[in-house]
Length: 585
Image (cartoon, rainbow, N blue to C red; front, top):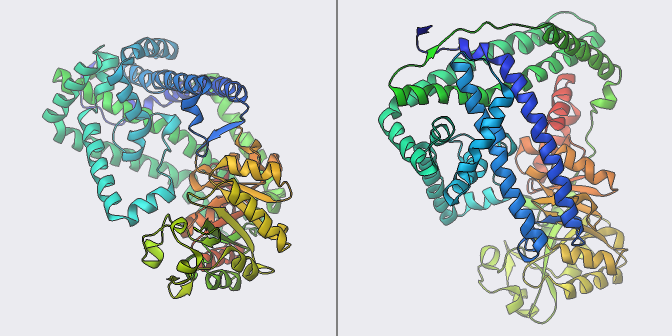
């Protein structure tokens, strides 16, 4: 044994053990999540529900089933942290110390250690690891929530409102400070069996005394790992693809080679993704021992043995990639379609192309190729229905009064960018034969009376097939489907759990982060359609126009039409990349 500062070698030598660990723990966690999902659905079904979502979340706090779901979910989160994070720390110690890696012993010790978190402060640590760390990017997190992000529509509201932006910035600074101060809290609890308070106190002390060294070590580690990954990516993906397009190969051969090398690149990327977090945990563990003992950890070089089983697995993987490439290449247009079938729906009438929620905005959307137009209706003081998105007219017309506080005659005096505020009847007449009208029942007056009145007005104009009624309130959508089954309905949600696709509606409108390939597939299996909202930036539009969604709601309609034209002119390489991106979304 010799003392030296650990460079990349021990991390690279640890790859076989890390991959085996990741496969074992992911299988266990997958089984755990499956069983929990089944249990939660049984509890949901016992209440007569198939899912709980943002439009029905109060049920969780008003029934014993809902409270039990919350308790089980929180308890499960503790054990998920133990299996997914604590065991990584224990395994890191074994790898760095040159010990034999025992995955099951690591998991057993991790589960036993999680009981020290069963208190109020421990719950705070769990919440930070599961929800806050992924958002701010500081501290250790778990694979279950590593992709957790603030929904786009909320982020856009925060970014456009100075007060919200200031408060959010202060909150981020506070959370980052908490994360930095407690970088080593889990190591103290797992490796030295400290309680939460003592581990937090020790972590703050270590960070304060070694902050500069920690920063330098992390920068060098990230740069080194980035260089290694860059070299591997270049050798496995970039260079072969470049040669494929440089060499004078027949079209079919070039296409097949492109498929093969991209699939190989995906496999390498997945393996790298499997290793990133364990590598970082190893680095944190190395630094923890360095800072607590004052000495660089003593590392014994390990003999890495590639067993026959590993060799067979590698050969099988290569054969699988080759066979899959041949199948995909022989059915290229089927697996990698060229054109998009996803329709464009203009947000709030005509998006940014016209005055919000006005007839002129809707007509503009129709002229530039929108399939549909999304509008918002609210009830006036004297029982009419007009178009407005916000709770009042302050933003669009400079009047702080709410629609329900004003008569139609008073609202007629207002304008949006010089355009009159239309009634529901007027917008229906303007849309007939031009666009499908996706009508959201909005605001405090969105109730069963609005459902009845909207259905009546639509039927009077013989526009049942031209209008889809939307709401964030599931009880209203269920009411319409039950009492007016001939009407088309859409439930708007940005978070849900359970069998969401079985909800009583014709469309499901999913927020961007929730509109995964699996979620869209599940909805289609139940014979329903999917709207994605609100995709405004070019990259997001490109992604969803290449997806299997039915339509995308956007403010940038002109840009959306340009993106669809770009999709039609894609290269084979881009078609494959887009399909893979959708598959892994």
